[in-house]
Length: 488
Image (cartoon, rainbow, N blue to C red; front, top):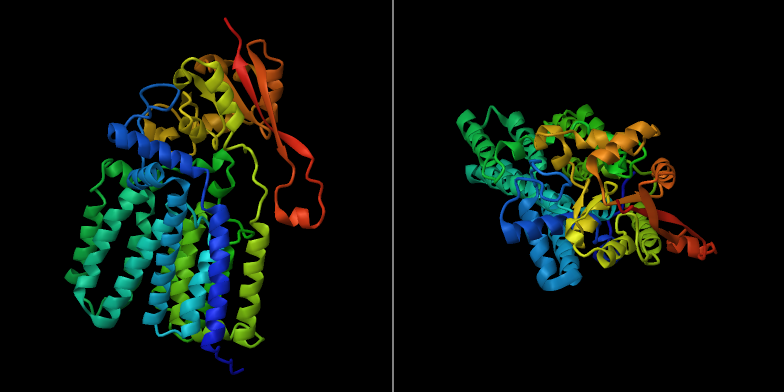
């Protein structure tokens, strides 16, 4: 079937629909609870220098690595000088830059004008973690590398190869463990052309890239951090689990694999087949890595644009219009939420209670769940048991104890003796228990050492789609309990 081309007016119309949907999405999702951890780390580094010992843990002497240390400083100063508005604009600027870089790559590959404009927008709309997390800066750095390598392939100028060490050096300081993707992409471009590229010309930039990784405050610990987090799935956090077929990001992988199969049949697969497989293996280790699949999809789409068009029975432009309008409307409707006073990861009232009732809240010791630790620290409350950073709680990094496995066991434990030993060992002043740790609540309710001093609830439904279908909004459900140690 011969697919019709879109008029420029229609293309720009779809572009503005996408742009509106991206802005609406950013308004509602730019602020992620991970902000608190980034801010707290950035604040400490700005005021005290690099953190090599985890000063926020309930016990002393635990080594740490802050793999996003430079990004943390950026977030801290942005919030310090410009507040939340500055953070929002920062996210929008990154999304705009990413959109441009993706469009530029497709232009280099001589894709149609419509695809150069529209495909990057769809990717930004659908990819995970387009917010304050460092995943956006990761995609930007990877796209900068892909564009520079593409320019090398087209022009033959070796100078483009020597940009890769710069990207790896920036990456190791902005988002540590993701440097590995730069090596995979570099090899994907160079290996198929090894006969036309001198070994020295390709090996030297790669060697410099490896050397540049050590230009960071934590040395080899930061370089190898991606290989030291094998047990993070024990935390039970969805984004830390292995990739599932139900993940929204599988959209990119499925389409990319389809195009790869078409390319293999035409003997055009090049090294991107190997790159896609390697990246997919790395991504499969954790749901949170799936945003990288967007790059694989983009490059492969650029390699074989015509194959995308043949995937549809409907005329291409009609299909694309329908998909974009549907996705745009869904994002607008589903992302308008009723603001909650607090959440499990942002326990406002628990933090206020401790601040009001303690003379020196910065000295208290609190047990908390994985997601809430950084919020307590953001509110200048004491020493926490765990926070949303896996590195300091891994035995291979802290050199003392496997806190991740201990936390995973305690939050699922029904053995009263083991719980007694755990709480006796750490001697917490407060225990923060979210609603999903019900076994721990039952244990503490029967304890003669702790009193429940605060119970918080939240609205059952907070999304616009529930309001549209008439769901009752006055129903409230338990959110968490706060326990305080009884006076000795």
